[in-house]
Length: 248
Image 1 (cartoon, one colour):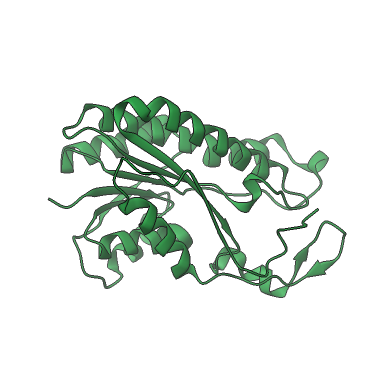
Image 2 (image 1 turned 45 degrees about the vertical axis):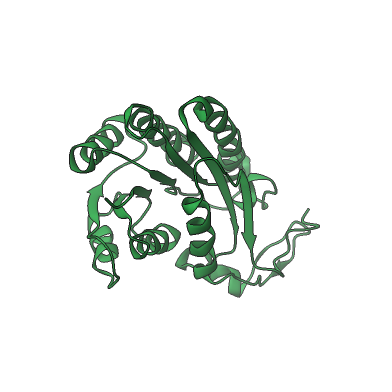
């Protein structure tokens, strides 16, 4: 039987690319996200491997997440990998101008959603035979070095680091490994503005190099294919010349 993976935020960008990459490695991939039409586009990408299971899901809603993982269990009876990738950001405006709704939307998607999905994945991984599995959380460069005007996004990504450590610790006794990948400037539609110019800590605006998305996929696949006795706890993959070292 092929291994089973769940990828959230699979309707575009990193999630879509990783889902296709996992399918190419023979995984049965459940693709989750809010936009059903975009999920269907992901599933339609020509690639060797099992058919993808399209599962429209709002990771910020407990009932929706519960339904996603119930469907995984009903279809495959196990889960080997969760890629916690779904997320969003707020407008780049001063912190004091953010609304509660803008803050709460980012927290619900980036942090609460990752927690809810991990919670359901752990339940399956603890109970299945053979026991265990792997969870990979999509952190960000912003998990340790924020950009200007990014309080909601950076705060949630810092929190993902704490969540990753807690899952690693609490899952250890049940053969559940947890990793975090911190990605810097992957070339997706979300980072197109980087090529034009983005705000720097000194107040200037400058273009930033971007990283070919395939390198991100390769990194996730490396982490995913390790035996459960081994783990990449944290991995940073970034455009070599992006202004991270010395940022701020």
